[in-house]
Image (cartoon, rainbow, N blue to C red; front, side, top):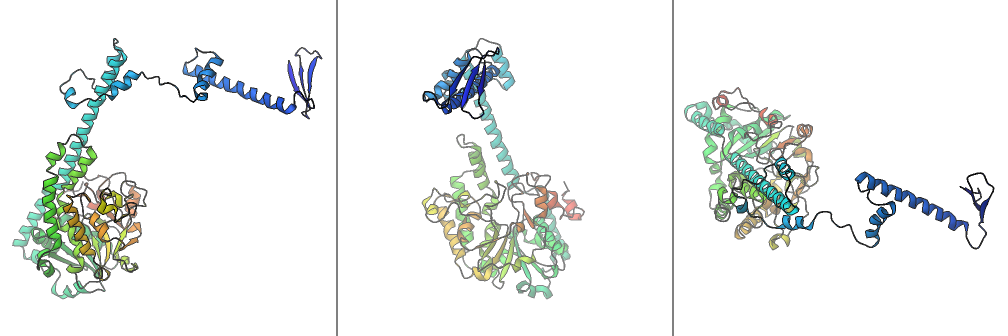
Amino acid sequence: MQLHISPSLRHVSVLHGKGLKEFIKVKVASKRFSCRKLFYSILFFTFLLRFVFVLTSVDVIDGENKCSTIGCLGKKLGPRILGRSHESTIPEVIYQTLQEPLSKDELQGRLDIPQTLEDFMIEMKKGGYDVKTFAVKLREMVTLMEQRTRMAKIQEYLYRHVASSSIPKQLHCLALRLANEHSNNAAARLQLPSAELVPALVDNSCFHFVLASDNVLAASVVATSLVRNCLQPQKVVLHIITDTKTYYPMQAWFSLHPLSPAIIEVKALHHFDWFTKGKVPVLEAMEKDQKVRSQFRGGSSAIVANTTEKPNVIAAKLQALNPKYNSVMNHIRIHLPELFPSLNKVVFLDDDVVVQTDLTPLWDIDMNGKVNGAVETCSGEDKFVMSKRLKSYLNFSHPLISENFNPNECAWAYGMNIFDLEAWRKTNISLTYHYWVEQNIKSDLSLWQLGTLPPGLIAFHDHVHIIDPFWHMLGLGYQENTSFSDVESAGVIHFNGRAKPWLEIAFPQLRPLWTKYVDFSDKIIKSCHIRAP
């Protein structure tokens, strides 16, 4: 049989396949059956046959070929037409068993729980197990693996906390050797800077940098990288602020390792007249903060012993115990206008940065009346470091925070900041900082958990001028998947995070960017067994 449709679509003929002339002719003009209806009917049945063929083929491929073509079609279309989904092929008893709670004590000392997937499969293939037994074994094995994974993560965080908050013996040795040099070697007790260079310390035509640190080796890397990459080193003045215990080692190092023609000043906090007069708000806040942390957070043992909190929460609490978060070196930047009353503008550097370019063009940036020039941290491709907004640091479930700030507002970075001290003195930024630190202490540290950045984000709110990301690349102490080419092309790289470059836990491929500014042939460095990686 053959189907023939005329080119004009006016007639449709059906002929027998054996050449007989008998045929059935349907006229379009007929009132009983229109050409349009016939044409659409043929298209519909053609599509339907193809659809049935495809479904049947899929069933055969899946091994479900125990139904006829029409049966398979009904099986597939029936539930959808009636508004029902397929019934699950997983027995309900498995769901019920897996949802039953299982405590840690129930698994304690058990030797019959499969330790690996391979053990589990071997045991199941032995036979004799029903569906419920299968689910019970699976639940026990997965729960045991979850518990072990959790403990491994917590141990990792604990070891990283200890490694990042402890002083390596090499750095301790360096401080002791330099203190000894200061006592026995007149060359290590030179006045910094020399008398004829003292006027430059208040000369606003120079480029003034401020570094607060109690780490001699880290400070030396910052200073060396800054001066080595500067096009006008003779106009660079670096003010190094340290604490009382580190003052003599720091002075000894820079007396024995001058960076001429740059000018280096080393001062301890007690050398600043302003700091020794009356009460210093930041010191009072630090003392109260330390008491609150010890009372409400406990030691690392208490934190790790918590069996209900997730590992990332425990990691955050361990990080809050890091001594740097209660260090005066970390908080002192909020008092820069008082510490340097004669200066108009400074660039503040953290001691875990490396300078890779000339930073003097920062003085040419128009701050538009703002106080703090900083890199924004909510627009980069790196989701871990460069996706930070206020909600990343502040607790917006607290009414004091939610009523005053926008959670989606961009955050900015400490570590390499331009501070217009003239503009700063016209504001109440320092008072705002101390007010919010006090509020956080009164609320049992519920406004934010740790660090100086959260109160800084609040205090400098509406006083920040965003600068090009080239000037400050963050996150080198957090992760190792940073693009090395991007790191090399950044103006300042910042090892913020636990993996500091002077620690053993530093990322191996990033550490050479820091160690290139350490002279490992220096006799003092060699005597403390500080070696290149």
